[in-house]
Image (cartoon, rainbow, N blue to C red; front, side):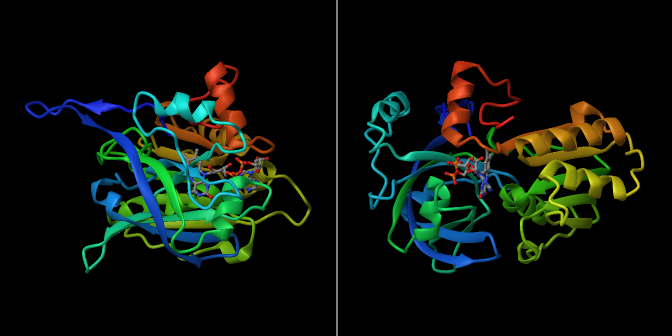
Length: 305
Ligand SMILES: Cc1cc2nc3c(=O)[nH]c(=O)nc-3n(C[C@H](O)[C@H](O)[C@H](O)COP(=O)(O)OP(=O)(O)OC[C@H]3O[C@@H](n4cnc5c(N)ncnc54)[C@H](O)[C@@H]3O)c2cc1C
């Protein structure tokens, strides 16, 4: 997500910061699929948290394996980034992008946020942290203080007649949250690519959704080739003029799916919202570094493309 703090001028009232730091306390964890762990966070600070829903993302700051909680030297909007970058590597919390799967207020008036983590191996800091998260663990996040914010990327034209979706496992929480909020009867064609058959989680939607699950190919084909075969097996018909597409997942696969939607289905490229959530072989630090040194062209600042 954006690491600068945007402000909104609301007229008579003082400008409101769109993003700010929050303290997230782990309340509980639950396995919701072969690869997915849902971590539910709470804490007083969430009273001011305002998810815009859909694919709302946020930045988490996670402690290193030898640390109990996240330690940041500054949460001031003007100085935190410099202070964080200057921390010695062995103390600096890792910053990672995730999706707000759900925000709710309980019957008792407590605020809770769910984040669904893909567990993809202990060598990766965020996956490692999630696998060991326990009630009482405390992390920090930069998240939305205003529901209308730039980290909600799903912005279809309200007149869009068909919605095309592609998500891999990392974008499935976002896709699930989008599906839940669509208007009744909205026509959707979706392909969700997951590493394991038990990752085909139950999805709820009032939309008229046709969802195809794409599992790893038995022939050992890569992600992009596997999903392209599934897309083409669906006898590509040309999309209507009012189609909108939302694509998120591994960067190389996202590019391949985008090309397919535009070139083979005829979706207007301006109506395709695509975001690389991660890139095979690159950690999020490497992607951040590329974004800051201008070495990787990307559609938006936190894109892995
Ligand atoms: C806007 C946005 C929203 C996101 N929302 C979610 C979400 O809700 N849930 C979620 O799980 N992820 C989400 N991601 C993706 C997540 O940020 C990345 O997967 C991130 O790399 C995980 O950090 P890590 O420390 O585990 O791995 P890193 O240290 O960043 O990467 C280490 C290695 O693991 C590889 N890798 C990264 N992710 C995966 C994976 N899933 N499977 C296999 N290999 C991988 C990398 O290519 C690299 O080689 C989102 C990303 C973005 C940009």
